[in-house]
Image: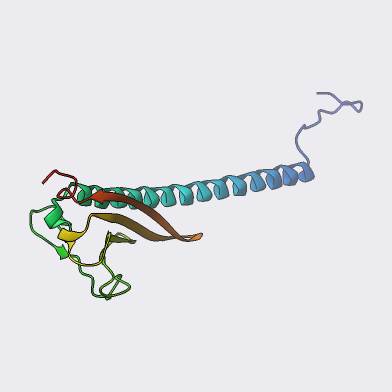
Length: 163
């Protein structure tokens, strides 16, 4: 381009324009990185929550499908051998001895899984008309402790005519 003075001018951005463009780019880049960080955090929390839900569902299904006389025995690694016998002793996750609430627990990759079998009346499992099955998975997130809880009732098959 030829100017009024007959010389060829060099077109380009001024130093101020370059600095403004760099500032805008920097702010945009920081916002983008922060968005990716938040998205990754939510993805991680969602993964742990899904795992906690799967553990809770698995424990409830295992208790629903167990024979009534084996309801207080658990095979946690599915190898056909009993790993845990639930007790009502008031120790560990079991709050009170002799209250008819049998407890078991297991830790798996940062998730504390606790499950209970609560008899409809204190005493022997065989004389209880039904039980309340409950499973609770607790885990920590960046936003604090979280919990997944599921429960269901199961009737004693002897009392409903299936045994």
